[in-house]
Length: 195
Image 1 (spheres, rainbow, N blue to C red):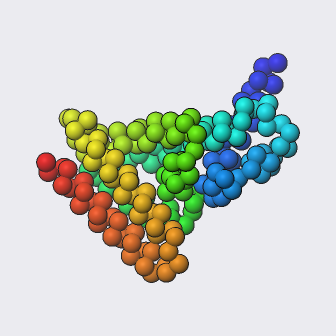
Image 2 (cartoon, one colour; image 1 turned 90 degrees about the horizontal axis):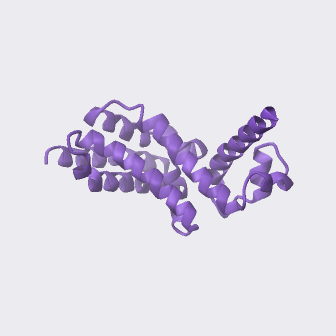
Image 3 (cartoon, helix red, strand yellow; image 1 turned 90 degrees about the vertical axis):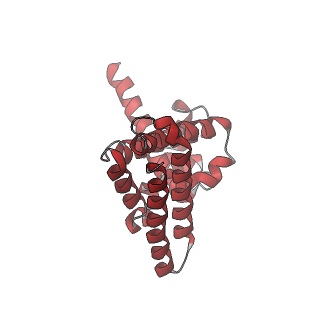
């Protein structure tokens, strides 16, 4: 019995992880249940053994993607301004921009999340707050709440710049936009850092 429970949990986690990648690549509306299950190596008929609805899977996958982004990028960055610069330079890298399914869920899904169900929007909001609190702790180590709005603005600037860079067909212009994004983000944090 224990094996069955562990297997079900591992399978559920595999569905969540593969769904997160697919959602970022094809969007929420562009990813049907059958495709999401096929990505995990399962049939569509087994879906309801793991989730109540597609919305339930989407909210869970968004939460997982936000948690993973924090764990692999923000939590491992150095403290203080140096860590923020590390995050910003990674975020605005051509590799991050070009690898949508392994990249930032903000830039890949923000427009659809805004139109999604409340549980999905709540999962996103929770994940975004964790990210901005990580930024704020680096901006103002002795008073993170004072830097929360600047951190939210930084996240917005980063996601919007990355979305636009991904949308441009002119590769040179898209790369220049990433470089300008780094300068803009560093200017924003330097303004806050000196206040």
